[in-house]
Length: 338
Image (cartoon, rainbow, N blue to C red; front, side):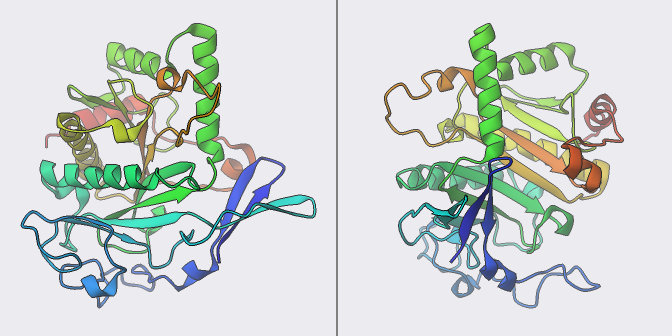
């Protein structure tokens, strides 16, 4: 059974999940090819846990071919959905049993198709799957945060080559999102303005770090990018919650993500990367609970190409060394013709 342990020095939770040592690895050894049996391909539905959501245009039977996007529980989860939360003290320390959910969004039945190479509708279907599963998992009172992320390539932590993303429901709010929330709240209290809106206005006015924009979203290289060619995607509409995106706005989101990833692919030659969706925590009615979060925080996406590693300096200081100025990266990406 997984468990969470809290580091009292920094307030960070660590998930211990020994079972994940058994997960299949496509990238082991000298070759980086697909495994002999790709459990995520059409026709191999029996090799995964039963689907909890799928896009099936022709109304095909669950757990059979005929799907475009398929969501299944992770066979080797970092957290398990069965059981009740049981926080306890272990001497001086805090421990929590590993309750949560860990799901895999299989983005396409085609093992050779990357997310950025899908149609606009296909990319929108992937994010619609995120939204659908988020809304469902939010109903569970044990879960306090929904993390959506995508790892591509071994340097980014991916173990399977077939295009997929992951969704985790966590029993605690991660330290990194807490930090962002606290900064956004302080900024709002001091200036009566939204820090994300101020960043967005500055970038759009300046244009120096803008890579792409449409009616709903802006793609730009952050002023203090940690990695070369790092990208942020901000929605123009204020909302703290990713699950508020729907309809035409979902198509605009798909357009922004597809454009961003396509530019990175052309510029960097299919880089390893991480993509993370940052959204607000699950909020349940509580007296005087964060009455300004609808105004001070905005959901957003970060895309982190893994062109450089993280070493002792980064771990020891929290600083990052970036060899490419964001202005130079943005100019290069803007000039790419798709």
